[in-house]
Length: 349
Picture 1 (tube, rainbow, N blue to C red):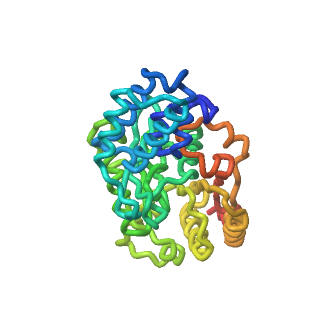
Picture 2 (cartoon, helix red, strand yellow; picture 1 turned 120 degrees about the vertical axis):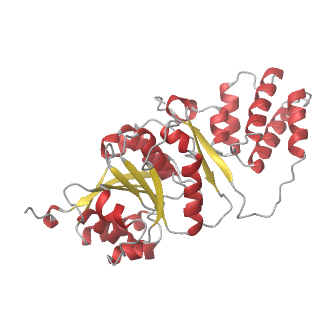
Picture 3 (cartoon, rainbow, N blue to C red; picture 1 turned 45 degrees about the horizontal axis):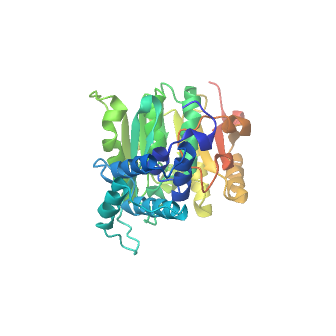
């Protein structure tokens, strides 16, 4: 992926696999196909949606695909054409036999998937109707991936700890493409941890190119910011050894949003960095929805002598796109910050 144009880079299938907004996905189909309502292109559209519908390894939600089909048929009819294509009619029959509840179901899951380097497919299970924000994919996670893919020196050869890992996208990409030594994905809720384990297992062959590797390149563990902020962590804790001894890089995406948790998050960052101030760093990707919230986080970091250096906005703008998900928030709203311990706290023995 070397293009920088977001609109032109991704195909209809790319958009649909990523569960981009249905209208954006259809625009991609129209943009990449001359005479999109021709018999040939109706067949092409139907084949793509049918393939995703029948994807046994995990595809977009049936609800999402039915909506794309509905909008496409409406667009065909809007051109004064009748829906007579055999493949399109077959798809209508297949999808109509699947009833979709209008009542949101928190247990309903689906998969967002992305073609990355060498056309390798990464699948991520998400729960779009669950109220746990850790069970869905966020723009800053994709942006942090894109940043680290361009600047892998931050994590190359390092043990990397991801806090607030959510569905695990960033840590998985770092492990596969950035030559990190080992990655530990951590989160707080039982639901998030269960989903992390699933996504690691789901992508195991992708991570290892089918090889057996011991110890595993990517593992998961529970990590509570309140506990790690206090410093009173039992050595039996799942993340203890990685946090205090192994890891040199802490990464996180879209974790700065809850005001009451900011002091704990900042102190967790500080405690991580202070274990080895000259060699450790933290790299956060944050979608700026409210500048005041992020500024409170920065002030808390400054108060405890943690430096926060923002990557230049031009650097972020010029990153290649790998993920067609920037619709609710453009990538220009994401900030990448590299954190380190203030030199006044570093003592040389």
